[in-house]
Every structure is written in structure tokens, then in C-alpha cells.
Image 1 (cartoon, rainbow, N blue to C red):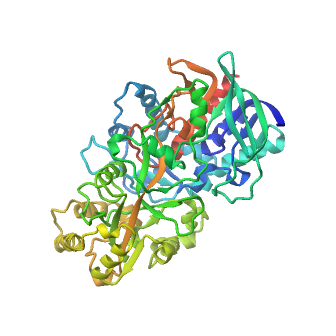
Image 2: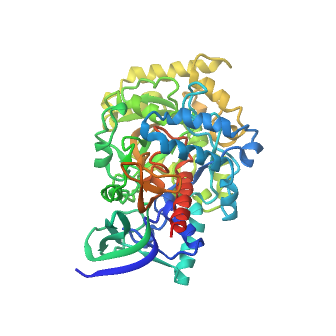
Image 3: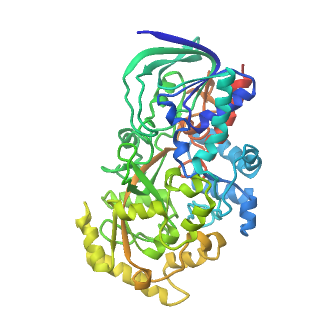
Length: 554
């Protein structure tokens, strides 16, 4: 087999957001770089390109303009209450969490603004919690949407790489799949692998793994930024933690198939320590994409707080497991039911105000920076275009004029025979009776009224409380929800410079990691749960740290 050799200062494995940020930092330090990825050039930007572009800031101008009082102390309280760090190996993740919080409260926003990244003025409130002040969740809205969504965040870092390519300071090698990190005397000195056959597959689609030749890269420093395991359902099930019940037999996949976890094992073989592999982040509001790109392609509903959430039998989920409040708490509860799906029941009025779909491709107004479309889709009458497409074509959606017909439609879907029609009717009617007064014992309705006190929720995120069965709010809608795979919260243990650590806690010379490969920093800076807007932010922060440290070490 033909083997081509490349020599460079810094090798970056994976061109997602963390890899692109690390590339920019190494280039700014005057180093030559090689970037390799197993996919075609079409996929530059990785998962970040597909993302909604949410970023976590603390005490931002956007928050202050909306009357939100935030602080580093409050954010630290929320982060550590959510993370639940409780293991000896959480020492590095704790350090990373502290450093990231300081970054999010400090230079993060200004740094991104200098790169030309702007932000939507309405701040979202994700992971609302609903427990005590020391429990999991965001006490205040902190979810800032980048203007341009994921592609808008990727753009300046991609531009820096492409400029360096033109100048001869960077080499980008698509369809180069790393199979080995090369070592000499205990030092990582580069990588070797297979050059894969060219592919015309569109962005995100599965591609061939046919090898046509080999390659080697000699590098003084190597950065692993190749993502986690979310595209590999078998690996997700193998690492599924007992605390979340049995792994689902049926799931939808929220990331492309190339998110296969292969580089984690390869880095481990080179001496890197993998920690917290049982910590993972999967959503419970997944729907099957009616127009799929990758295998088992699922899309997440970013729900407002009003939909009635029922398990597969029709029983309402307990407080505070309301839409958008506690992702992993809801996942654990639903896994205990013995079913792989659950249901939203809601009105058309709720859909048009509250339903947003995660992903750059599902938000053409924000992604395309189209103000006119944004006003029409977010503030106009009816559901936004991408949501309406799912209402029209999505196999998980049932739209009917009355409750009996809605229940019949739900029961007609696969697995719908588990639904107790009388239970569904009782839950919906009982909920609606609570709407007659401004006070209530129903915790979800109380939360709705509290949410409307926040200007951002009132404008675009939370429908005015009303009876689901009110004919004026119809027709009725039910949505069958699936577990949707997404993020690895554990990964390669790293110090604050992104250098990979070995089993004895000593650095692995020449090896760095960033992004999801490092659990977004330290091997799992989120702990058991995340606060949202922190995945892209973790890629930015860890990629910056690894790129700077790798360059400084040369």
C-alpha cells in the first residue's frame, strides 16, 4: 500500500469546532499545521455546523436588557448543583468547570464579537430545573443564540484555516482516517491511518470506509478533537449507565454517523486516560426526521413549557419533569416505564408559539440572518415553516379536531396500543380545569405563569396559558417522542492546557485533546448533567486552550 508522509508542527485530528479553534490558535502562534478528518471537505465544521448555535453567557448585555440579574456566583451554584461531581477523577473536570465559568462571565462574549459573531437579543431559558436553589438547572435564562446559528460560529474559524491554506501554512487532508497515534520513547509524534476513497455524499450523510492508500503525519504536537460516541448507537448502549435504567431498544440519532467514538480508543491505546464514559447527554424530545440526512436521523424539539407530557401509557409525568426543565431526570423517569417513547399533547396555539426545532437547517431565519423571515416565522400567525413541514409530513405527529380522534390517531402509531384512552382524557381534562383561576395546585401551570413574567418567554417562547381543549386554540396535536442520542460528557482527561493525562496523572508528551473528545475539558467538565449552551462553548474554550498550549510547547 502506498503511504504518503507529511511533516508539521501541530496535527489536528478532527475539523469540528474544537479542532478549528485549536487550528486558529496554533496558526496565530506562527506554527504550521495539518488538519485531518475521515469525511469529505463538505463536512468541515462537524457537528457544530448542524447546531442551533446556543451559547452560555453569564451577566451578558442581552440578559441585562431583558431585566435578568445574573452573576458568576449564581452561575457557579447552578453549574455545580447540576454537575453533581462526586468522584475522585472529577478533580480535573472541577478545575475546568471553574475556568469555563470565569470565561463565560468574562472574555468569551467580547472574544466572539471581535470575530464577527453576533447574538439574537432574546435569551432562552433551557434546563429550568424546578427543584431547589441548590438542585440542577438554570436559575435564570442564559441560552444565547448566535446570529447565523452553528454555521455562523464556525465561519470565522473556517475562514482562518482557509486563509492559512492559501498561504501555505496549513494543509487540510479530507478522507484521512486515523487508525493509530504514533509514539517514540513514550512521546506522541503524530498519527497514521488510511486514505479513504473519494465520496460525493452530501454533508452529514454516511460515507464509504473503503481504504485506497495509507498516510503518516509527523508532528511535534497532536490535538485529538474528533468528537464523541453519539452517532454509534451500539457504543451508546454499551456505555449506558445503570442509573438511567435499561438502554432503549429503539432510539433516533441526533448526530451524523461519523461521530463514532473511534479516536477515543486510539488515544487510550497511546496512553491517554479515559474517564466518565458512563456520563452522557441524550434528549427525550426526539422526533424522526421526515427528510433524513443520516441513518436514523432524529431532530430535537426545543420545547416551551406548556405541552402536556405523558408516558407511553398516557400518565402525566410528575413535577418538575415538564418540557425544558430537566433532560436527564426525565430520561431516567421514562426509562423506568419500560417503554422507549412518550407523548406531548398540546394545542395549535402552543405549537405556533413554543415549538422550535434544534439545528441550523431547521431555523433558516436565524441561520440565514433573515430579519424579515424571522419576524414572520417567530411572531406571525401559525407554526414556523420547518415545524409545519413536520406537522404535514412527520410520522410522529397526529393532528385532529377533537380529543377522541386524537387519541385514536395516537393509538394507531407503532406502540400506541399501550395508551390508555381513559387515562389520557382524564389527564387533559384535569389539567384544563386548573385554568379557571389565576391560582392553582398544578405545578406546571404555576411555572407557566411564572415564565410569562420573563419578557423573553412572553414575546416568543411561552404561550398565554389556556385550555388545551379550547376549540379556539385548536386543532389538537400529539407528538410521539423518542430518545435522541447526542453528547458524550466524559472523555480524555486533560489539564487546563488541554494536555492529555495518563493513568498515573502525568501528561502524555505530545498529546492534547479538545471538544467532546475531552468531555469538553478535563474529561467531563459538565459532570452528570449540562446546562445547555455549554457544548459549543466547551468546544470553543477547550479548543482555544489546546491550540495555545500545543503551540507554546514547541
